[in-house]
Image 1 (cartoon, rainbow over the protein chains, first blue to last red):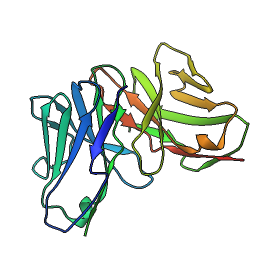
Image 2: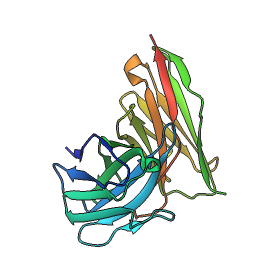
Image 3: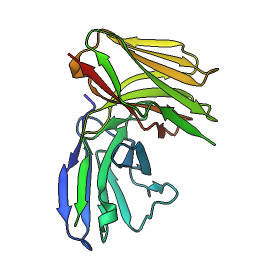
Length: 114
Length: 112
């Protein structure tokens, strides 16, 4: 149980385009979903926290107009990287919680912006 | 300043031995601490959680200790196997908002 999926697993796009990443909790309803970014050999950096039906809470330094988060249902959250640039290339990971102590992580999405 | 430190150097352990990883933190008062495993190109996988009032937690070959006086957690893998090779991350949770504060992880290599 407690499986979280992400789609796509890898995406390559041209600079200036927008990319949408989906995060789904497959067998449970997620009260809260988190979006992280991770650089090679670095710790996970929390970007934002989202609760179903409400606006996401962004961490300091994360541009909310750049990284659009939609949490339309208890099983789906999306992250859209708008007007992507090469510096946005990274590994993006989502996680979900049922309101307990444990976060369940998706497998991650590798974004490469050319 | 607040920080979480894990050994940035890779840890090489002979198969069958016990691997011990360290997580130190400063200027935090965590409600609990978690350990995760991360394989290359994959998201973290939850392993164990230990609360501030618990000294030790076990799960199969895994053991975690939590010393709030030393501000340190130790993560042990007994009878280590090559399949245990991965990066292990510790994360603190400060309160009930479920946000995790992460260490950078320690890469563990178990040699056959």
